[in-house]
Length: 453
Image 1: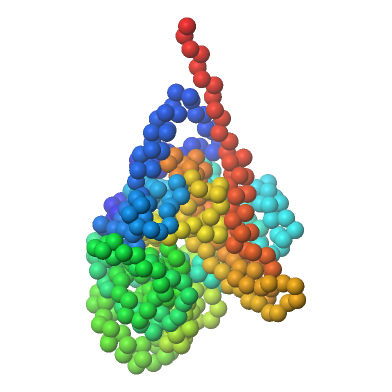
Image 2: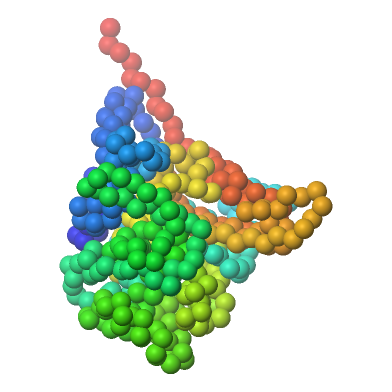
């Protein structure tokens, strides 16, 4: 995760994307060079940032891809080295979501079929950055987006860092890497497991967060976004508030943290919560009536800190967030880049991102789900197939194929389709949308030039 200036499109090691109006022509004579480029990327790993970040899970994942640790291996599209994960619209800070494209919107609605009224969806095609195309259906449909709200937490933390050290990225990096966070009651409780990797012994343990677990602020951010640990998310929320409160004297000793949250008047703590998680959304150009994380992700976190009402999101506001991320407008370019790289470094691809059609694509992804069940004869209710509520939410940036992107698009998807496996439904939509994008931007293979006798 580099703190160096963000390269503009076409100035990094990656191939520049093509103009949307142009058709990509691949000459037979150039195929060998393209394959050589793909081979170079395949020799690198997506989680190569351990030396800079100190995120131990990252090193464990790198070793897993080398066969040195028994764990998930990444698909081809997740094998980009850190320098290849960049922001691609920093030169267009004035760009906002364009007007709706009726034709593309109709194509998207057709993909949803007879369940279209249970979805909110936005598609932003950035393949030609000079002429972006936008489609949405029920873009202002609002519901609790579950763990997608952890994007708001990441924004809030990086905003607090930037406010504390406005002209010192090196100091921000140092805080992320060296601030040691010890799990306490804010982490109670969560069923998600995290990966605890020891580089010295090459051992990996998967389990839920326990009191006394210690990791750097960067590691807790990684656990929050890579596997969507609610315990980790609440610990990051705790420390975002502490950073906002104590500024340059953060981090604070554990006993002082305990006293602060137990002795400070509850109304003052709630006001601090709002300054930490609501005000930064407004400062970054978001409508808090359409996007808000209003409480902690754990029961004990919510017992200790009174939030500010409902949590929710819409497809349109989340699409705006992903656009601003690519522009470097989430806090600043450095912060946006760190968030994007954290979204790339997921432990494994699930739900929308697990679409086989995206195996060769670079995918930057966050999802969240909430479901509720009641007894129903003849129906087996459970995770991702609730019959009372069945919220599934996906936010994704796709660069396809990863090694030489010709497609670049954003999808934000909110659904509440009862009694169906929503994880599988989002995966299938991921495939259908990728195929639609390929159709809209076809590749033409030119015939080989005639050989001279």
